[in-house]
Length: 125
Image (tube, rainbow, N blue to C red; front, side, top):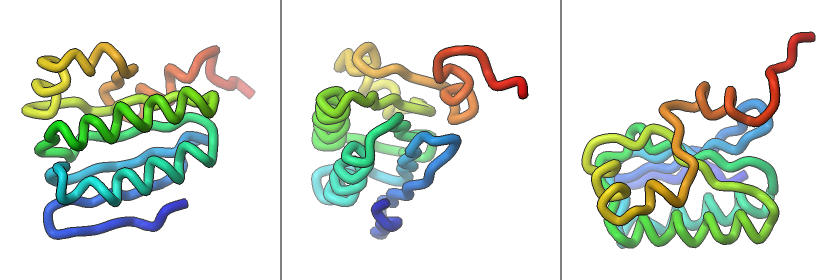
């Protein structure tokens, strides 16, 4: 996994939850802060499996950030995986809505909801 990347305005943290790779973003995602996200998503896609990008604490996302997510979505599809978004809110949700990108990604309210919709009934054993 990619270690946590940090800058003054933007952070990327990667963790695994119930077999899914969760990439948590916080702060402002733009041209200057996008490289750590690109690196984290590239590493997560190559690891295979389910990829959840948590935008709950993302305050701003410009076209560069959107393009990183769209590119990573295509890479995930080519690898036989999926990229899903969590916690679209505020100005970030508005940007996704205006561009139509919210219709391209599966979107969940939170990680628990996303994991509950993994397909199939939960384990009862």
